[in-house]
Length: 462
Image (cartoon, rainbow, N blue to C red; front, top):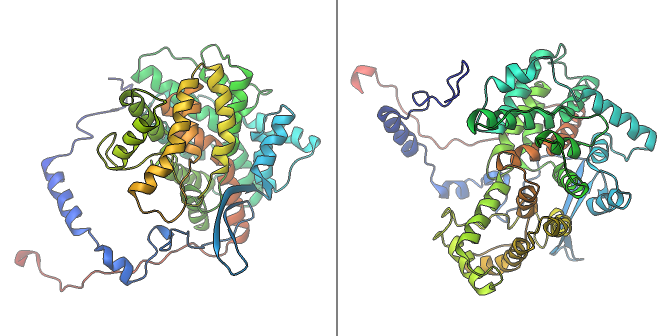
């Protein structure tokens, strides 16, 4: 076991003693709130109404999601999903930089942060700024990342972000120029923090050779990720462009997703940038949010090992039904990557991804797997409709394809969620600045107490 002065994975530190187990059972029993009380008090659980729609808690000018249109009499009509960044349709943005054979993540970041597409002069200046911030404090990699490796890259990423606070002489100042400086610095160094954390994990927990490739100023974020991650730093043009598209599609998704809402909530308290970003990282780590694409890959590994004919639609449908009935896989009754809290007929990010996934599957000679993904995407909505009562359409979401893309890029599962963070830090930064500019009150939702009241009893009479 690697320790290097740290008691990492110390069994005693992680032990659940019989005493703790007994106390936990008390928590589990005492902590139950009867479900009917939520209905009785008209509580919107998860900030969603009875139809699953998000409760309106704020306004934003950063992005917009459309999943329904309305008839003349106000009837809600499902439609193919649309996603807009600062008023620009995500489809148009992707088509624009692909047509010009450019990388789009940096341009997307500029758009999210400043509300407009940059001119060539503005864009060149922005690239220089990001390149200038693409460095870490002296000995940071050795002292912070390598000396305390972690099995979970998201926790290492959060710890690194909080530690950067100690290197910033204006760490707690929340004026917009300072927050912008901090935000651009974090956007620039997130790929380094994530990849170097993975290299430390590989070296100390998997006994692989340790190598640290530095980023290059003239490369895009996507290119630098692949360069830093691979021993020889080599990648194909298609690989870099598809990873770039993945970053663009994950960069922002409205103010209502869990991690971005966390950004608004924590920012409204007046706290510093590093604390705000660390809180959002904690939210994104959850398997119900940023960790979902890992579950998709694990589910498909299970399907591939149990379904003999990947082109037999009846066999695939039968296994999907068994998944929903909690008979196989993780027995949670979920087909991961299917459905979305907002979209009904389609997720535009998944639709964009699908085209490029097919191209990459050809280059990687994994067309058979791509057909299996397509078959599941086609069959799952019907199977879900047969087994469950659903209130809106079900379609593949962006997580459905992203895990497959990352596996074809030979990216390790340990980096799937950190890659999401590398992209979403752009959206979080834009929302943090928007909150600081517009908010005057701390966000404080209401919780109704349903507890009983008791008279105090002295200790010797209990």
